[in-house]
Image (cartoon, rainbow, N blue to C red; front, side, top):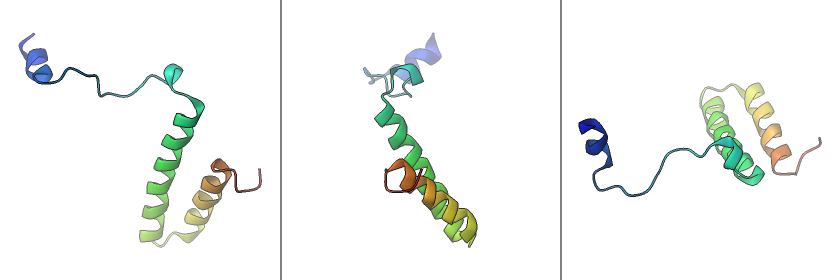
Length: 68
């Protein structure tokens, strides 16, 4: 209990992740887009342009701007 109180001090809201069942499809897409954007940035930094192109295509598809 001491450890739990230590982590709860001054916090009255839950700030953890939301269970999948409670997230909307838009929230899931936004989360996926954020993850893909980070992966795209890393791929470009590593000069892995083939992977970057695949990631960009997936990002565009999720945004509704690419072919299905």
